[in-house]
Amino acid sequence: MFGFIKKSLKGIVKKFEKPAEDKDEVNIQEIEKKTIIKSKKTGDKIKKESTPKKENEPKTESKPIEEKDVEIREEVKPKKRSFFSKQISEKDLEKFKLELIKANVSFDVAEEISEKLRDKDGRNIKKLLRTELLNLLEQDEFKIETFIKDKIKEQGNCMVLFFGYNGSGKTTTIARLGYLLKEQKIPVVFAAADTFRAAAIEQLAAHADNLKIDIVKHKYGGDPAAVVFDAKKHAEAINGVVLVDTAGRLHSDKNLMEELHKILRINKPDMTILVLDSLTGSDILEQIEKFGEVDFDALILTKVDVNEKGGAMLSVKQKTDKPILFLGMGQEYKDLEKFDAEKIIKKMLD
Image 1 (tube, rainbow, N blue to C red):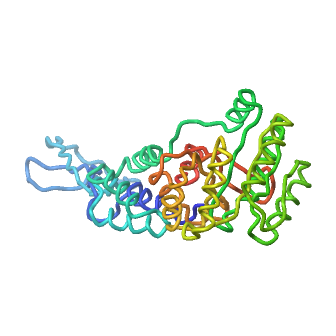
Image 2 (cartoon, rainbow, N blue to C red):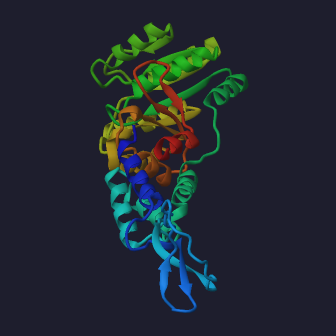
Image 3 (cartoon, one colour):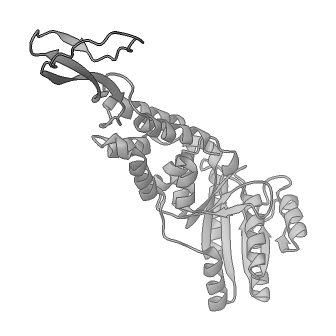
C-alpha cells in the first residue's frame, strides 16, 4: 500500500539524511605525536632508541650527559567526517515534484508541497514533510455512528445515500457500513435503488442476507425514488437508518444525473456520501468536481489496500474540504477503516 508515494517521500528523506562522502567533507586533525631528540651541541636530530647492553662489556668512564631538548612534533593527518547536506537544491525539488506526480499526486499538490521545502534545511526534511502532510490530511473528527444515532433520536429515522462511478465499490461499502452500524446496535435497512444495472439488486440482496439486514427492492426499470421512499418508511418503522444504493453513473450520463437529483429532491437524505475508487488516479479530481454539483457531505475511498501509488488521497484532500470517513481495505465486512491522518502519514514516511 502507498508504495510509489512511500518511495518518493523516503527518497528525498534518505538523500538528506545520508552522510555526504564527497567534496563536502570536513577534515579534523588527528594528532600523532613522535618524540624527537635534538642535540644542542650538534644540532642533529635522532630518534630516541634503547640499545641492549652486551654481557662482559668493559666499563667505560661515564661522560657527562649533554643537555638535550625534547621537541614534540605534531604530525597532522586528515580524517574525514561526514556531515548532513543542508539546503535543498532546485534540482532536488524538481525531481521530488515529478516523483509525486508519478504517484498520482496532482500537479497543484506536488507544487504546493515542493514549494514548502524551498530554501529549507535538508536536515529537517522528514519533520517538514510530516508537517505539510498533516496540514493537508488533517480534518475535524466526524463519527457517522453518532450522527445517525442523533438523527434517529431526533426524527425517528435517518437516511444516508451513496453515489459514485460504476465499479467504485458503492454496494460493498454500503454492506460494510451496514455491518459496522449493526455492531453498534443500530437498526439498518438497505434500499436497492439501482434499478438500472443488471444484477445490482441481487448483489445488495446477497449482502443483506449474509448480514441479516432488511432490504427494500422493486423490479428493474422501476422508479429509484419510489424505492427510497418505501425504504424510508421501513426505517421509520424500525426506528433505524436506511442506506441507499444508487446506480453507478458518469457525470456525462444526463438521464442518470437527473434521476439522482430527483431522488435527492423527493427524499431529502440526511447525508450523502460520494464513493471514490482510489485506483482511479488523477481522474478522481474530475469526479469530485462533477459530483460536487450534487453537493455531497462526505467521501469514502475504496480499494486503498491495493493502491500502490497512494497520491490520489492527497489530491482529494486538497480539492475538497469534505471529510473522508473511511478507507475500504481488504475483503471482509469489517475491513472499513476509519480515516486517520496520523496513521496514514506514518505509513507513508516510516
